[in-house]
Amino acid sequence: MEKLIITAAICGAEVTKEHNPNVPYTIEEIRNEAKKAYDAGASVIHLHVREDDGTPTQSKERYAACMKEIREVCPDVIIQPSTGGAVGMSADERLQPLELSPEMATLDCGTLNFGGDEIFVNTENMIIEFAKRMKDRSIKPECEVFDKSMIDMAVRLMKKGHIESPMHFNLVMGVNGGISGEPRDLIYLSESLPEGSTFTVSGIGRVQLPLSTMAILLGGHVRVGFEDNIYLKKGQLAESNADFVKRVVELSGILGREVATPHEARQILGISK
Image (cartoon, rainbow, N blue to C red; front, side):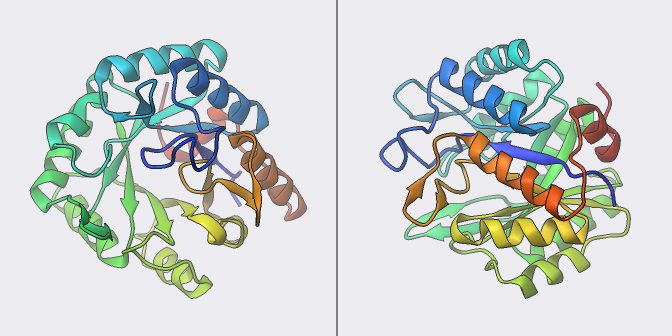
């Protein structure tokens, strides 16, 4: 099997210090959490940014400041900004990080009910426009998938030339409104991907550990971090994103799969620095 790419989603847009006081907000906190995750074995930092009070923002300036600090302490890590932002943000707000021409960025491939009155809107025309912006800047899209229909959307847009092949997917499982985190669901999604694709699995909350284990065994890759989970185990808050990364490194070693460096991750994903 290919070496395992570990992505650390270090802060997200929704989780707060009220949920776990170790969630990073400030530029310094984000830099420090990225460094800890990198030192533990993460080769990709999936990045949302916050204002100092924790308010989610897609500000290009805030992203630029955070990315600069991260590169100073882990210069070869892959920084993957989110274009999902937070629920309620406009498309123009969400697109701002692409102006910084990162190596990778997320491309959400469908609309999702997030619970209550919250709807995460991604129309087909929005997806096409986001994909075009990435293609124009040679940014590798990570196709964010919350259900099977979003794989179908991504494949359809690939056939029309909006997304280049081979594609990389992130299978986000266990989100309210999306596909559940049962083993059968991961098998279903992974077997629905086009030939030659790579995929990462992001298990939310309690399904993170079993889905990470399955992803390793299936030849996929793994995302962990505070965006997806705040507990290392039931009743025990994680002290850092590094706690989750270290667990995946240990698990991967037990299962006989080596962990990829950032350089190796670029080769696997087909991106160049």
